[in-house]
Image 1: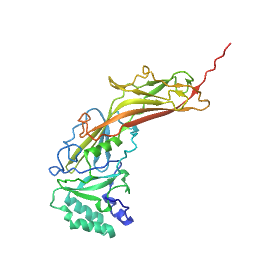
Image 2: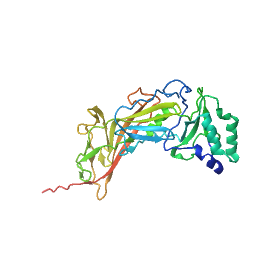
Image 3: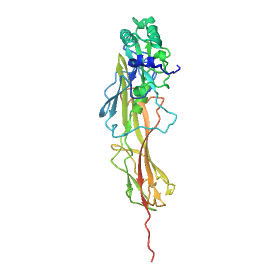
Image 4: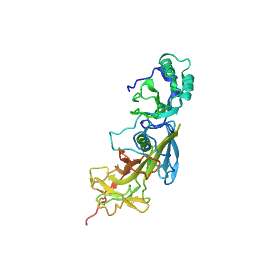
Length: 344
């Protein structure tokens, strides 16, 4: 659908209709109880079984949009950094539909929100009245939610469709109504990844020209991280869980005067999680020139492989299409000194 800006009066009249969401995801419909769209589970737009308790410790709950709930593994908390990705073609959706009203509730909503309105808002209200709000029909009214809670002209929803009627079976679901796949995108973008737990030896302010700098992986092993996004409202029930697994550590010296300028270490499964043995990796940075009175911007990056399941179980079957890989980075300034030798 073509997106267009709302007239001022229209925006005021529809403010109640918008979901004050803080998040991202697109969608495609599921349905209510026995009135659900499609089959069961999967990314095809159907509903999954009732979400079961997540495996592993949970760090707490959050929410996205009007009715989407979040739960995270204990190591996925606010001390981490928001996930980023090197995939420049991937971007979060700006809006989506969520189930909101029965026909009777929608009739009351329209009367309350648009009573006495003029112009386009009045036309919108009259159009819904002519449809008789689908009273007597099986299904639900879904309403649009915006990332950040404010209208975005990039949203592919026309002003004639702030709410849509979703019957029990839709051969071609609206591309903006929520699915497990889109819940996985919400979960992905709500993930907090730990910064690379690295320590330099010698320390960052004591590096020496031509002396190899060892990158030590501190703090024990890293475990995988998961986030579940789920919805259970008006009989619409589905969930998706993204799982991020650390696979590689890359360090960059921050100058061309280093040998090598970067090193990459593979993480391997070990007791308690994933580790890297940088000491035996044969790849440690050696600075060839002093930083003088300044410093070099040393950078460490963790690459995470991200998969998702169409349930609240992080150990469920991996679904397709996949999600982009995740990145978490850490930067610090390093000082490199040159030791002068005296020849006699």
